[in-house]
Image 1: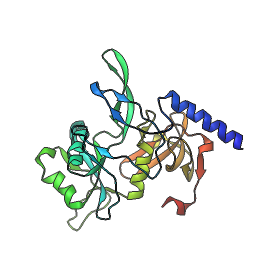
Image 2: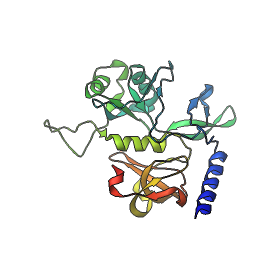
Image 3: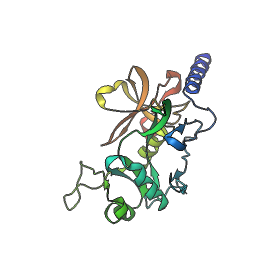
Amino acid sequence: MRSSFNEAKKASNLTLSAQGFDMSTLSNVKTRGGEAVPPRTGLDPDAFPKAKSSKTGVSVEYVHDPTKKWYVLRASYGREDIAADILIEDGTYTYIAKRYTERIIDGKIRKTLQSLIPNLLFAYTTEEKAKEYVKETPRLSFLTFYYNHFTSGLDMKNPPLIVPLAEMENFMRATISSNEHLLFVNPSQCHYKSGDTVEVTEGLFKGVHGKVARVAGQQRVVITLPQIGLVSTAYIPTAFIRKIKPKETN
């Protein structure tokens, strides 16, 4: 049994190495010309990197704050990176899920970062600050709330969508590597093996909770962002999957 596990782990590491990953650290670094340095893994499941402005280099650490929540924001015409820079420079931790894709630049195939969920960004901030960004900041006139269409307030209007802390951190954990095999999928693309919730115990997606499904011909773990969609990891060996009890998912 142990031999099978080690073989699976070795095979996974070889696959990740072939995809351009260093198994000791993780880094998402943009370089000139839109080209990006491939990410590296090793991220502690409970640690997340600083949010950094691509314009000024200003960075913000992710620290739990009971006065803040994860707001979902929509930037029109693919301007989520511009919005993120403005929010980060104002001291707000902001997250955009990305994946590496291949593009031809100057006649050569390069790996570049593209948004996994186009036009969406996630801001960890207070209600007052979120409203300020959306309604009172001229530079962010292209930014709107992503609304919760399954509930309404006293004014009978849909409130801004907020992602619960645990779900957001699971989403971040699943996408922080910017792996090129990450997918934003719809239910028809996911062929679930069971309804059990599992945890990834080893490899690039260690610590991710979701459900095992066959997606694009491979066994993967799929996580749900309510009212937004489904995100699929890259291939996960069976030896790296542990079924967890319902009380462990909270």
